[in-house]
Amino acid sequence: MIFDFTDYDKLLPLVTNPLIASALLGLMGGLIGIFVMTRDSSFAVHGISEISFAGAAVALLIGLDVVLGSVIGSAAAAILIGILGTRAKDRNSIIAVLMPFGLGIGILALSLYEGRTSNKFGLLTGQIIAIDSPSLFWLTAISIFVILVLVIIWRPLQFASLDAEVAKARGVATGKLGFGFLLLLGLAVAASVQVVGALLVLSLLVTPAAAALRVTSSPKLAPLLSVSFAMTSAIGGILLALGGGLPVSPYITSVSFFIYLVARVVEVMRKRSAKQSVSKGLKA
Image (cartoon, rainbow, N blue to C red):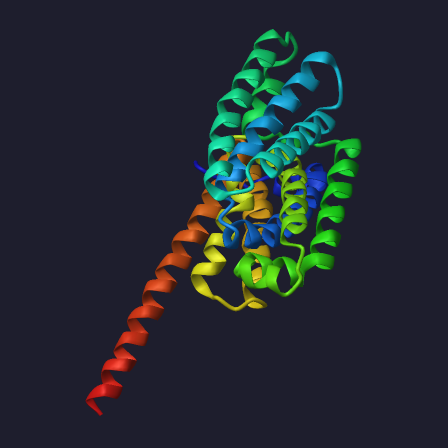
């Protein structure tokens, strides 16, 4: 049997913390993911996640808090990308250099760590079921901070993301906004790594927003859909995992990917319908 929901009512109370964390991270990931897509920063997410993984692995090795190590790694990566990668070409080069370095340092730290194997594996693929109250506190604090700052800078950041040259001409501090956005992205990555791990972080910060933008280009509807998709992926993944008996991450990534596929189908159908309407109008 693939799924067994016999004792589902008894298992749900055990995942209260993970469900709260998933809801918050889905909200944060869905919102920031819109800017990741419009600013073409998907590659940056992956690069920051590798350094975040390195920071978490080093923290695990020396006995510090893993979330703190992840945040320090993500912040360091965001600062380096922001300072050295002012142009898109330079930014991609810096990210390509940081990724293998971060992965190498992380693997080295994990190979030296003599603790439980599950802790090592969790940094790569997530360990949301193991989230305790202190970890939930930090994840909640990070998520709320990122969401609040995003709300405050939403309009100028949206303007700068859609047309940086015009925004700069209108007096928008595009450089500072871009640097600030990278720092927020670093925090979002650090929080998300705790849920889906360094290797699968794109499923929360990129895929939901990519699906939303396939369905609509509305600046108001797209963030709402992105948040809905991200929360459905995170929370739905946990609920499915309870009955599946497998790690949570594959379910989260699978739900996220399925939503993206459905969005692509909807996009194709809408375009086909629009072409048919135009054809009918021309014949008339």
